[in-house]
Image 1 (tube, rainbow, N blue to C red):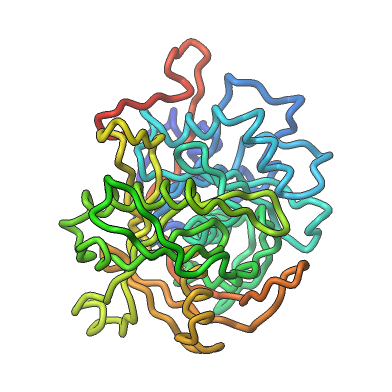
Image 2 (cartoon, one colour; image 1 turned 120 degrees about the horizontal axis):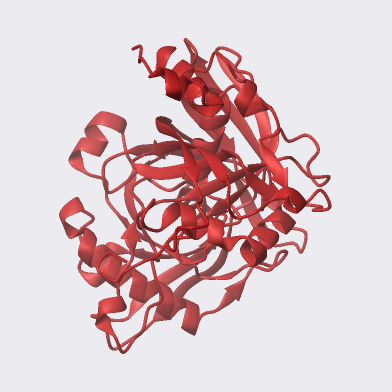
Amino acid sequence: FKMSLPSWLLRRTSLVTLGNTLSRRGYAVKNTDYFSASPTISCEDFNKNHSLLAVDLHCGGLPARVIVRGAPYEESDKSCMERRSRIMSDHDYLRTTLITEPRGYPCQNANFILPPTEACPEAAYSYVIAENNFIYPAFSGHNTICVATALLATGMIPMEQPVTTFTLEAPCGPIRIEASCEQGRVNSITFVNQPAFVGKLGVLVERPELPNPVTVDICWGGMWYAIADASEVGLELKPENAADVVRLGEMIKVATREQHPINHPIIDYPGCDIMAFRGPPSKEGIELYGAHARNAVVMSTGKLDWNNPSTWRGNVDRSPCGSGTSAIMAMLHAKGELDIGEDFVHESLVSTIFTGSLQSETKLEDGTPAVVPQVTGSAHVTQVSEIIIDERDSLRHGYTLPDIW
């Protein structure tokens, strides 16, 4: 469809691009000058009264805000993991600006598009992922699918049809991307993750606040997952049970972190920092997609206080979760329930689908057995916007209130 913009709006370079974006096959960009020229700025030129150009998308129902222009970086950063550390230490206010109120909400995510580093010269871009509760994942699948789609939709990566291939640099390392493209649009994104592996299988988690002891598997897929069967706490994974899912899931996650702490054997990344309930797929998921399982991933929106039940809350990942799918496939393979090359169709709580498989077995540098996951999903552009950070605004860097947080 076509969209007419008023003349004063057309004078804004970024919004000219927005007009072009909306007028060509839904989102493919005609004029990519604004996006392709210097998408980021050096820290020495960076100040807190500026604008950020964002492409908003959702993948499987979960949103992501991709900052394609305006994110700070240092040329001296030797890896994307260093860039993650720098944003965490020096620029976390950008995360709160983008994903807390008044611009965000508890399920929002942010991604900062940056130049590649010397650790991954083959990459088209590096990207740092930011989530609520000061969580910066080493990898996120739904965010990666959104980032890859945004880079193609804006023309920052030239689109080739029917398949475009490229590499992105995530904090965890290189991520290979294969995009299925048709008529100027992205149909699906397949990513090859860094190795996923089992940390601990079958640990017991107990708290008086839980209905009973829970058996948990701790697995890595880009974050540390506490994985439990929903049936162990009397849950059915249905949308109407989302409040109970987050209440019980957040308690299980925090209890697992307290009782069974773990760290990545190669990088400094402690856990658990996220939780996944597992259950059977819905009837519709089986009939429409051939789903093998359903999951509900629980993410934090604040700090849980065992003495304050009002803090026993979080939010549900609306997507089937790419890093969670990777971790669960590693767990299933370790238990002999998923073979290399076997498809694993994963359904979310809102009945969206990722299709995963394991490419191969491998080992980490320290010899830890691991697998190489790949996951396919789709993202959709929902808006393009210029985000203004006004130094006169006392709430410019965001805020939260415990009514929804």
